[in-house]
Amino acid sequence: MGAELFDGIILDAPCTGSGTWGRSPENISYFNAKKIDEFATLQKEIAKNVSLHLKVGKPLVYITCSVFEKENEEVIAYIQKELGYSLHSYKVLKGYYEKADSMFVARLIKL
Image 1 (cartoon, rainbow, N blue to C red):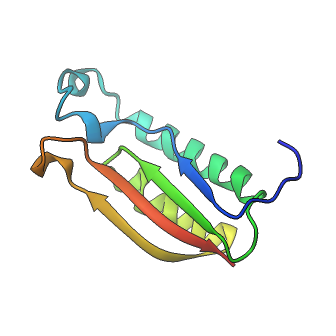
Image 2: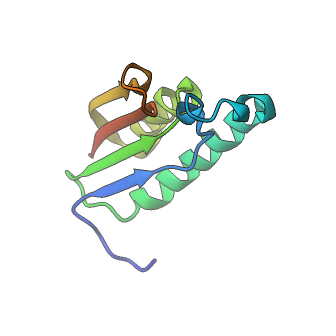
């Protein structure tokens, strides 16, 4: 990446994929809980890097297919506190009601 600044960034972050376990329950038996911390660290690092390329006052949309707070709400708290964003909105999309994947999405504004 160069020095480009964008009017908006969608960060579809790599994650544990726990929101997809409804359609792939076999993944639960192979899951290692240490992966949650590893992904949360990676998500924060990616958010820090992409933040350098977002214009002030513009949105960052953060998405995971995880249901873990550490990958979602805690990363959003980090983005707000450490990277200087305000939280516009967030939602947990509970796919299990619709026989679909569950996802987390948040819209933040760079200050």
